[in-house]
Image (cartoon, rainbow, N blue to C red; front, side, top):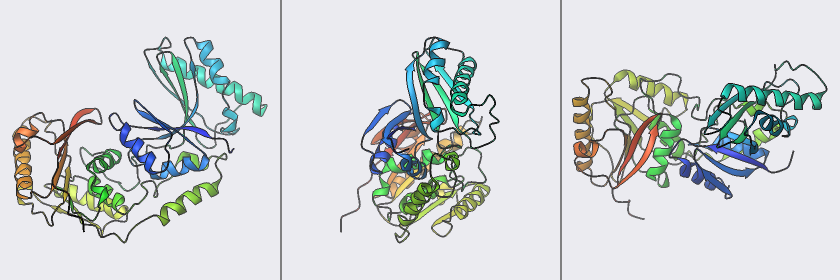
Length: 381
């Protein structure tokens, strides 16, 4: 199958432009940015490469088709007309998921059933059988109904891309790896990864570990598997080529100065275990330390953090004190840049100054501001 495919990199709300920039850096210039996704052209090898390399996207999908579907008949016929037999073998497992918004076909379970029935009918014609055991590779199909337009996709990823494989344990309120990578890319620290990097509220260590992976150009999907690795339609040698390329592009000769701290010793244990699992135990240092005792090393560093949100009763005073301490640290180290993702409305007041830039992001379902306090850039040598 050498024909060009239409692929979709899904994006968390507010990060579409970041995902598009990642794709451009990977060499995909013909992109279309929409709410929650970036569409681009690619071939089979690009399914492999994008699953391995995309840091801020949630999934890589194949766009199977898009058509008007105001009735179940239109949904059935439009689905049946698509080339499912090119992808799904006779023994493939093909569950159907669905979403509907502002569409006449508002019942998601009914729409899922119609799509499933249409695909079965199409595969019956191709394989000349009446029964499908579905005990083979997994092909997750989604029907997304928006304004009476049905978008049918095939998920090449499986478990979402934020599941890198290094975080076996989690702390109470973990930051997704995809969001952590986005915060780092938005800070532009990656343009000079030998600069110091520090997270004073590191929790399970996601931000420092993602920074180390970015600094050394380690493909985030290198240590995990994907549903489409088991698909007959994608030759195994393409996956091997993509993995070999990713290994060749690792830049482990770059000196890193990445560390994190947290007041909770148990969180530090989790962070250290995650760094070890990621193969970065020697490159990232963690210590149990309250913010008041932090001493930063080096100049022109970058501090990025996801401070506690204070959702429990009685925590607000502690959160305000922490933010004030972070503001004092920022004032003591004028060459450093500081970044924080927070839903706290009074953050800038407690921090002691207005942010230079703000960006609305969603940490899970929580609306946050990504506040950016920009220090001077390091002098050019």
